[in-house]
Length: 445
Image (cartoon, rainbow, N blue to C red; front, side, top):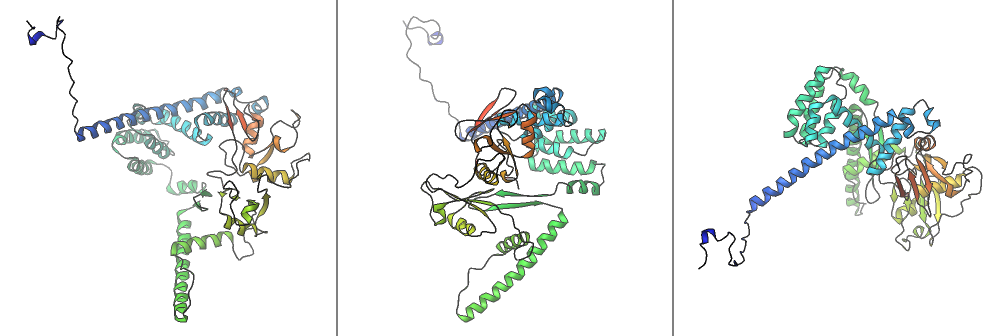
C-alpha cells in the first residue's frame, strides 16, 4: 500500500515520479525593478572602487616623496626640485599602468588626499559608495580657497548631507554656491587668481575640422562675441544686397553663408591676421604622399597628414602643398611611404633629421605626451657621452623638455625595439612596448 501523501517525502522505499518545477513568473515591472537594483549595486561598487583608487594614488605619491631614491638617480637627488621630480616620475609610472595621463594620476591623488584630510564626512560617504566620483570632483574643486576650520566643517557636513540625493550637476551648483558664501577671499582677488589660468588650445574634430578654445575673462569674451556678432550682421546685409543685385541682373551667386559660418570665418581671419602685415607666418609640416598631390588616394587608402592634426583630404592637401610660404613640404615615396632626401650622417641632429623625427613621431615620444615634436628636444636613446650612442635616426627621439629632463635624472628608461617600437621601463618593474603615432588624438597647442 502506498504511503500517506503527507509523509511521502520522507525516506520512502517507493520511487517517486520526477517533479516538474514550475517557472517563476516575473512581471515586467518586477523585471525592470530587479535590473535597476542591479544597476544601483554596480554603481555603489564602482563608487567604492573609485574611492579606493584615489586613496591608493595618494599613497603612491606620498610614499615616493618620502623615499626619493625609488625613482631618482644620484644626479636627480641633487636637484633643487627633487621632490617634484620624483612625484612626476611616480605619476608617470602609475599612469602607464592605469592607462591614464600623469596629470590625471596627480589630480586623483590630490583629490584622495584632500577628501581624506579636509572632507572626512563626504569621504566616508564616498567610501561607502553612496556618492559618485563626479560628486567628489566637484566637492574637491570648490573646497579650494576654504581655509577657515569652521567654513571647511560646514562645507563638508552640508555637502555630505546633500550628495546622496542630488545629480552631479545639481550638486556642483550647490557646492559652488556654498563655496562663494563661505569664502573669506574677496571676489576681486578670486577673479585675479582665475585670470592667471587663461589660455588657448586646439582640439581636433572630425572631417578635417578642429575646435579652437579660449579660456579668457568674461568681459573679454563678451567683447569678442559682440564684435563677431556685429560684424557678421553687416556681412550678412551685404550678402543680401549682393543677392538682390544678382537676381535683378539674372545671374547667380555662391550659396549664402549663415551667420555662424560668417562668425567662424571672421575669427579665423582676425586671429591669423589675413591681409595684414602681421599675418601668421607659421610653417606647419604637411606630409603629402606623392599620389595625393595628383588628386588620388594612395594604394592603401593613404591620406595626407597635417602635422598636429592628422589625415586630411587630398584636395585640401594639394591646395596647401602649393602654398610654399606657409608650409614646409616633405614628399613621400608613393610605394614605400618613406620620407625622401633627408641626411642623417652628421654629429648633431641636422634640420633634416629634426624634420624627419617631427613627421615620424608627431609629438613627444613619451607615451601619452601630446607636446608637439617640432618644439621638442632631440634626445639620444643611448646617451652620446655615457653610452657612446650614435647620432642617427634610430637612436634619436623627440622629447619635450620636461620629459627629456625626467629621462635624464630619473630611473625611467626608454629603449628601441625592432622596427619602430619603443619600450619604456620603470623602477617598479613595469615595461610597456608601444609604437609612437604620427598625429595625436588631442594635441597640445
